[in-house]
Length: 386
Ligand SMILES: NC(=O)C1=CN([C@@H]2O[C@H](COP(=O)(O)OP(=O)(O)OC[C@H]3O[C@@H](n4cnc5c(N)ncnc54)[C@H](O)[C@@H]3O)[C@@H](O)[C@H]2O)C=CC1
Ligand SMILES: O=C(O)C(=O)CO
Image 1: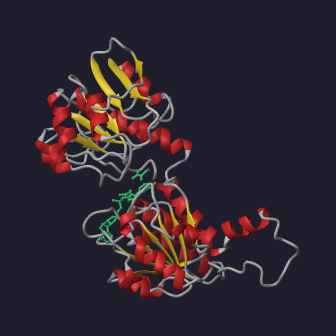
Image 2: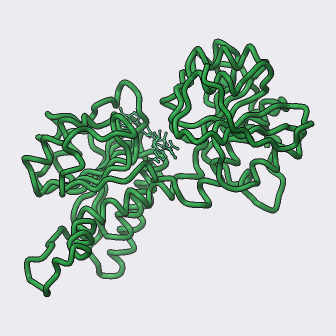
Image 3: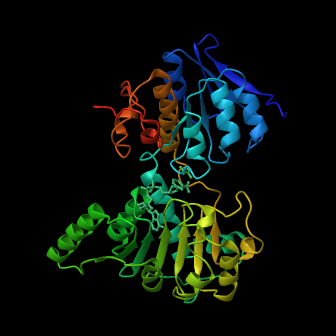
């Protein structure tokens, strides 16, 4: 068994043992656990992705809860190890939990937490950044400049796309997709077409109000449309950003056939999960359509890219950093710790996981509740009246 070598311990005499598989930003999350009598053990092993054996060794014989990462496969092996060690709580430090087998956790009586809300704007801002960088060819132009190739202004140098008046398409208009849509519509006066299983009522109202404001000021109003199918979005939009969860309905949502329906000069952005795109098909599409551009934060076989992707000038690639703002990452750590702590203390579940601000106030104690437990219903956990 590969035993993790390096552990940092806070409050060694704490009653409850909580393990974090990684150091996380900020100290508030540690302080909140320590104040409530937890011994906090942080794995500081220099290995980015821990194996199942590493995590089983970390869990040990007695463990009340674990804070884990989206790079770890939390399935039956880990939940049974946690349950054998007396653990009742696990939280991903992420909103997405496609790396977690929630049914296995429920079977072992383990609550599964995630961290919604605190990363909505930060993630949407990266999707907007990738959209702009792709539209205006910023990365290519930066490389050109650094290579010493700039020898004077030219009318045809790095000509890109104007966003104003074009159509932005959003697939998955939940928290992040809606925030991204608002940024692109309000910031760049784009028209919206979106596809989601549910109606994004607040987003529609926001755009209707903004359109009225523009009209009243003598400007061209923006428009919105809820598409009846994803294909409609792919056909009509100039910039398309993917924001659904990853599950079997969204695996390879973007594939050879769907790419073929998109405009030749479209921009595709993915800040959701890599397998939402068939990356092999995408590489082929990029090769044959030089004016088609992508901005990718996530990859099908993370941390690897499919062969050929890195050679494509029309692809911008960044290493899964969409939620990487200081405020957000500290907030994610806090929510993950409070999910675990709340379950250990027997607190009820917060009633609205979209409204997590009360947990994030630096100068106030957080509510006595678990911010977001995805299998709360299946475990029959009570909901907070706060
Ligand atoms: N790249 C990064 O660092 C980050 C990635 N994410 C990813 O973004 C995802 C979305 O996060 P949130 O917006 O907070 O979640 P959310 O649950 O608010 O939104 C997801 C939306 O996808 C929709 N959806 C589900 N299946 C669909 C389908 N087949 N077709 C179209 N829409 C579908 C849902 O109805 C929902 O509105 C997360 O699950 C995570 O995987 C989230 C944060 C950071
Ligand atoms: O939260 C998530 O789902 C991420 O991908 C990282 O923030």
